[in-house]
Length: 214
Image (tube, rainbow, N blue to C red):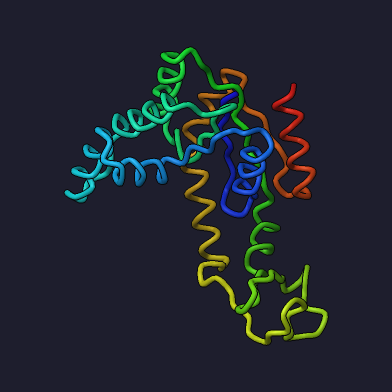
């Protein structure tokens, strides 16, 4: 089974992909990770990409497609979760060709939908213990004793510098820009399914399982 899992930063896409990898033995294909691995391994595609990046140029769709084809030929267990590809209609068409050439097809495009205002509140309010990494939130999960970590007793906390409303708005705009070209492509093929990404993690997992088992 091959799927594309979509969702803006903070929607829980990474968590759900990890669960699919662990529970269904699928393989998450992140184009960024694959590109770095191919360059390091000095594969034919990796050598091409390395030369292009050394010139400060963007890796072409053809190179990315070849990279994915190379990885598909190595086997993807019970199926692939495509992460970061496709991002354009041209790439979506290329993926169809890549899969068809290997007797495969794309089964589902699952988008984790979010309430942008609620998601912003979730992200902006989060912080962690600087010592043990325990997560907290200004509204939803504060330490039992103010200023003291429940787990290790540390009084030092930290926030990610990019967890700001402005940064999140930018991330959402980028996400919309990236998904806008491919959703209509897959909607005409009846492949798109949507899951409430604001629901509890277990509920999101259950909803995805229903789609995959349907």
